[in-house]
Length: 457
Figure 1: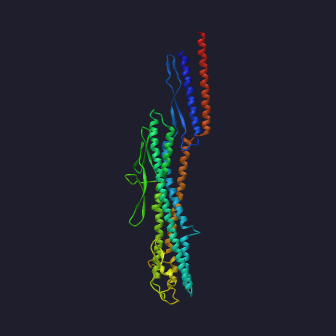
Figure 2: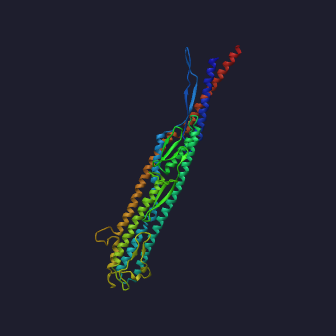
Figure 3: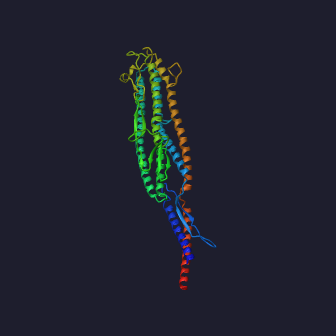
């Protein structure tokens, strides 16, 4: 009878293993399209055999557990590369917005306004009758001021939108970190028995990947199954304890602002190395600010050189009059005296109608500097700004494409390891089905042998 009992137990273990294998396969199939799901696999081992004088008899199969099929190194690398991609994409998007504000090569708003302004001066310098053409110079100057103010307002709107995005992403980050802390507690509770909580771990890994899109993080897993989330050298999540953030603005004495991400309560600044938040902060405080500074330099160059010439001019009504005021996009204005009385526009250093030296010199400022030291012209300063923006955009376009290819490659490798293949799962179903049928057949045979022995009594 002991032999039959051993055969029965062996068959029962095979039957149960087939059931668990089919359940695991069914779970894989059900979650084939679930975001972040890692394929699960039943782990088995042979039971210790029964040792008899004539040899060892196997006693079936043990189910050692259900494991996630995953490459931890690949997962961590994917988080790092995802952070960098999100950072590059964010800056590239901001530079695209800047290009849209300034206009395209076919519709260069500032360039066209500058060309119209200097063309009006050129027309004025060549005319024998100047009255209406002075009105045209004032009109083109007012148009140039309007364009500069429009650019300034658009850049300010872009900065405000970026600030709003920073606040929204910080709120998203806080939500993700809080949920990771909650999952840590759930996983610790579920794994008290020693078996991994696979589905909870999948959910946590998905949240960690989403967190890495916002800010580059590193993780350290504890023996109790929880993970510590570290950002910029600070531990943000430790078991169920979570550190939250807020976005603040730091104003400088010159009026500029700097976006900072600080911890709530202690308000300690956190260094962001990559991620969407880093990209937003860099876009606003570095790239958009650099564009504003460069355009301010164009304004200063224009104001200084036009005024340097126009103040030398004379009209029957006045002399030494500044043409423009201000030194930034925001403060740039046409002298109101000229708006009220365009006849005050000076064309020469004398009041003679034939004197057009000033008008001709101003008309040439786009391509010739009034500064005898040979510094850049107004046109060159502006073109340098445009080239700088285009160069940055091209650079970030390349980095986005390159980084996207790297992320795609890592995602493909991860999918090949952790992803669910329906064909493979269908084959596993047939294997477990056949195993179940065979084990059931052995049990039937053993039952028949029991009946035979009982009938012999």
